[in-house]
Length: 70
Image (tube, rainbow, N blue to C red; front, side, top):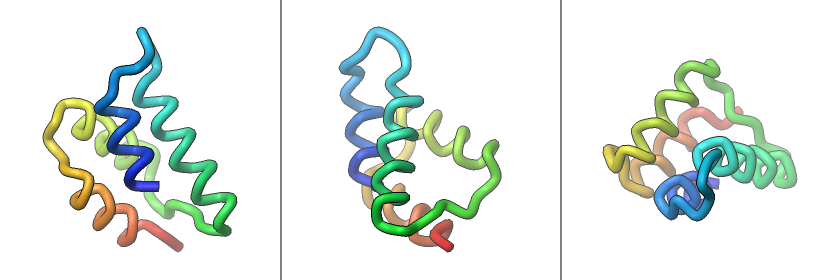
């Protein structure tokens, strides 16, 4: 899930919606694997903004996701 979040956000493959698609792909991957991110929407939003800005590494995203899994 962290890999989807990081690489889709960083790839800028789409004209618009890269962060939304990255978030959706991550969420779907987690749901398929019976996991849910237990974090406020504003924290998730801020994380994806920081990923897209290059302020978070994939390893940092993985650590944050592991803390948020419920």
